[in-house]
Image 1 (spheres, rainbow over the protein chains, first blue to last red):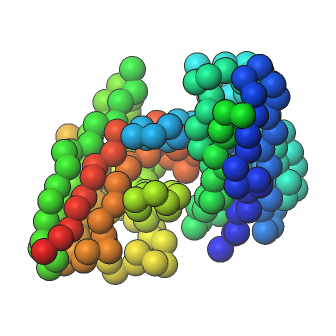
Image 2 (cartoon, rainbow over the protein chains, first blue to last red):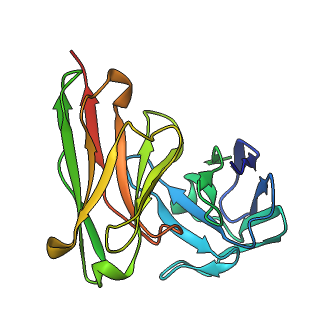
Length: 107
Length: 115
């Protein structure tokens, strides 16, 4: 099983500032890394797939990067609607696995 | 427009059986793998298993192997998640999601198991 480690667990950022979320995998996932946003009471929403490709309709302020076993989700200028929990997930090798999540909260 | 619409919330007793559904529309159902995921109250996301587009090959996470069954009915573009004997620990929100990268998700089905 590929273990996914996200950091930090909670990130406090002011609106308009940049947020950087990290995800480390226990082995290479060949770039098959996705990021999701989940708000309370809602299903997760795909933001990024293939490490850096934005899903349909995702604003350009969301960007993904990384390689090997280190990946990053950057939100360039936080809007009020961006405060949520973010998960990374590898889909390279079954069993697909998620990180434990980063809660992005308003500072 | 691609949509995955799940069946409604369920309240069951321990030992009862249950089958929940996920109906796809707006795309060719037999072109994409479909997965089921669990989110326990206040917790993160876990994959239970995934099934091939035609339904011939279902793969399960070790934790769920033998505990649930995933199937599809291609004729009505619907995937299913089934239990034969529910436990209180099965209480959770269950989501279907299209393909391993989860590009589309159902709205979730809340399953509550309580005596």
